[in-house]
Amino acid sequence: MKIKKLFSNQQAVVVAALVIICVVFSLLTDKFLQGTTFTNISKSAYYVAFMAIGVTFVISTGGIDLSIGTVAICCALIGGTLMENGLPMPLVLLVILLCGSLFGLINGILVSRLELPAFIATLGTMMVSRGLGSIVSKTKTISFPQGSAEGAWFREIFMVTKDGGLLPKNFPTGFLLLAFCAAVMAVVLNKTRTGRYILSIGSNKEATRLSGINVKKYETLAYVFSGFFAALAGIAYVAVFSTAQPNTGNGFELDAIAGVVIGGTSLSGGVGSILGTIIGVFIMTVLKIGFPYIGVQSHYQLFITGIILVFAVYMDILNRKRKV
Image 1 (cartoon, rainbow, N blue to C red):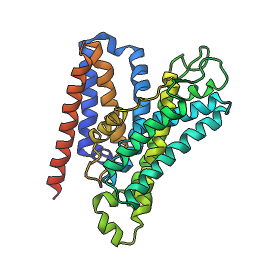
Image 2: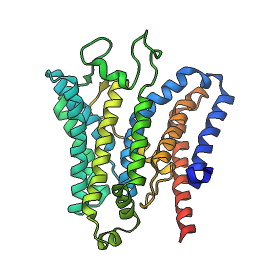
Image 3: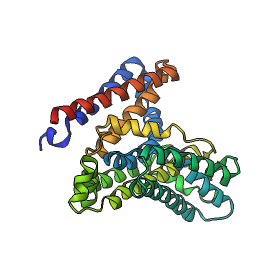
Image 4: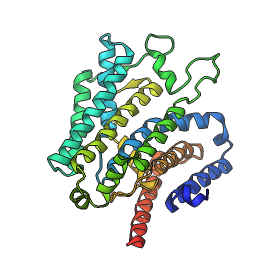
């Protein structure tokens, strides 16, 4: 199979960009090639990548979901509060995922059935989820089990926390879960009727409706995917960092959306790539982890990341013009 069949032009560019970035950091500092760097990149990429997988479906419809960052933390706070009140960890994780799906369903109804602009609907949900998390947790930080404490087993899904096993301590096992979820959702987006309908809505919503497809149903489903993966991102976040704090989560969605756009999914809708999304997220994460190694301060990181995002959007516009 030829390489061009595996990657679109933009995906080939982002793969090359990721390789070049890694090579540059490797040449500039010997710290980058240490084993801890891969661990730090993986841990930092987990929650962003899960959010990005979900929001890829929303952006493919031509919509946007600004609530995923605060929804991730809100769901973790709700689950953590129930955990402190004695709910077993398996049920806590289930509640977190259900809460995220419910937020996604609400967003989908607001956008598809009440016909609110996606920007406004999800901005409102972002505020609601941020406030709800503070209300439920009573503005206190929620700590999740660590070490040998009861319920701490869920952290092993994302990171090895104990010595003496088959894998070394701090090994990012969550990368395997991320790869599995990405593969499944890539099949859903590109090989199933659901995915084709979602992409069709982004290409031409009215034509899709006239062809007999239930546009409201599949547009809502895209937001449910986004909410579910935001909740999964919340689980990944507390598994790695152990705590969830109220009034946090703002800005997470920007990293996820930037990864999606850099990976080749069009903000205009109709074009989506889970593989590209994952690569885009890792570009963002490698920059985030690598810049401090060469002495680049955080405000310069934001500056450079912003330029990369604008360039990615501009490339998308040029690609669309060529196809017209």
